[in-house]
Amino acid sequence: MARLPWSRLSVRQRLTLTVAATTTTALVVVGFTVFFVEANRIEGTIDTSISQEIGEFRALQAEGDPTTGAPFASADRLSTLFLQQNLPDDNETLYAFGPTGGPSFQGGGSDPLRDSSQLRTLVDDLRQVGGTRSLDVDGREYRVAVQPVNDPEGASAFVVAHDVSSSLDELRELMITYALLAALSVLIVTAASSWIAGRLLRPVRHLRDTARGITDGDLGGRMEVTGHDDISDLQITFNDMLDRLEAAFVAQRALLDDAGHELRTPLTVLRGHLEVLDPTDPDDVAATRSLLVDEVDRMARLVNDLLMLAKARRPDFVTVAPTDITSLTRGVLDRARGLADRSWLLEESADIEAVVDGQRVTQAMLQLCDNAVRFTQPGDEVAVGSRVLGDDLELWVRDTGPGVSPAVQTSLFERFARDDDAAAEADHVGFGLGLSIVSAIAAAHGGHASLDDATSRGATFRLHLPIHPTRADDT
Image (cartoon, rainbow, N blue to C red; front, side, top):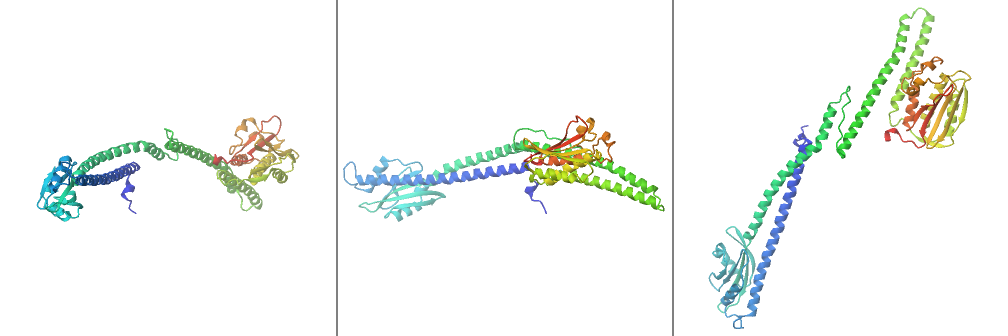
């Protein structure tokens, strides 16, 4: 589908054109509004002026001749006296028409109108009844008012004519000046808006350039945060996103490297035994089969643990709900008794209902119990407990095994971390993912896992969970 011309423009060009169009529209609307309002005001002023002249003429007629105190002897005497006492307004002309012929007297006469037959025709039409009409002479508009005057010689008329076109010419000149200034204003506003849009969008262009420069091997590009506005918030958010992506890529590479390293050993074992297998020897086949099945099971456990850690970053990894901690703690102990022959103890149980994912917490506790079983011997003591500390819930698993070497205590919850010294005393060693899963479950609840400093033989692992947790993704 062909793109519209508008969509081919840059954001800066769109903003500039939008501002220019909006400004032009506003100025045009204001100009037309001012013109029509002012034109109506001028026409109202003209009508008022004409009415005032007619009213003053009627008043003088009603007062009579001031020299005799009697009514005017003729219409010519009335018109002459009125024109002597009154001056016409700008663009206004006063006429006195006798019973016959053209105007016998005028004040400030307008040649096109005075010599026009249209004026005589209009006066003849209104000589008896009077009134006001508009007249178009040589392309100019006039407003003409006729006042009948009774005269012994016949009907006369007093006429007030206003040149409407001349009055509106001043307004038109003003509007031409306004149009020129408006056009100049549009140019200035357009140039200013283009410059401002360029400055405002400069961080966005930097964001685009930074995003283009990011590759799988280089996530080091960052935006320079400038200002304290929405664009600055976008820059900060973009940098935070890059930090998360970089951390995720680093973790992904480390996971792939570690997983590849851990899978390489069982695969080598499988290949080596298959290469030396004697298919004709039933005992050798049976022994090799048992060993290969065990190695496949180990790889399956490794894959399952890796999938568990991968799911730990999903928002639906835990589903919290009010959970009775007493029942949870006792349930962990009951399940752990089936792991091995140990002296299982319940040290303490928190009598509280906490908002946690009971299944995930049970999984983490059983993982700690399994870890304790691996590093203890039959008859050794393994204790489970829970209690409330302030706003946190603390659950723990304590054993009387060989303990944890100080050298690995700080990295024990990392993936594939193992205590080789303690492993020498264990029956079998895992992949070093169990404690990572425990830590991930605690983090998903907004808490953390810890190991007590060893003061004597044995180790104590603890889960610290908020009673009303907030997931790390929500902070």
